[in-house]
Image (cartoon, rainbow, N blue to C red; front, side):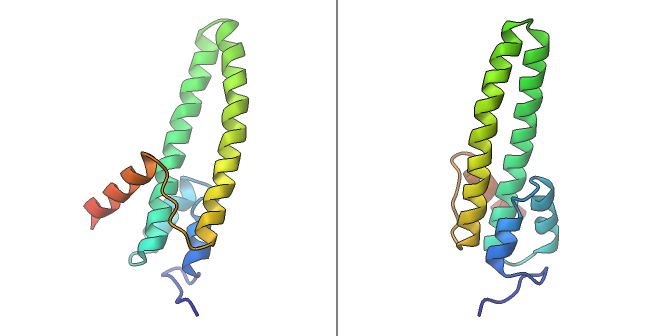
Length: 120
């Protein structure tokens, strides 16, 4: 039987829930869980990915509003691709965490690990 985390959840469930409303749930699990490295990794990766995702959406919104017509068309098409890709990535991240895997995203995962090792 897997021991519960600081929040009383199993580590795989806490890791998966870190992605649910990223970056907010990631931050929540970083605050609640102080010792479990698996949960802290997924929480930090969810936080970093969530912040990067918000910045990307803001940049895309600015682009589509600043550049007339062409910016809107490109912004709309890119939004569709990003939404679909992001949704699939979100599901994969939650599924892998629930399966007990530390699936590290390129760049973001390495950055999240570096933040955790610097915070220790």
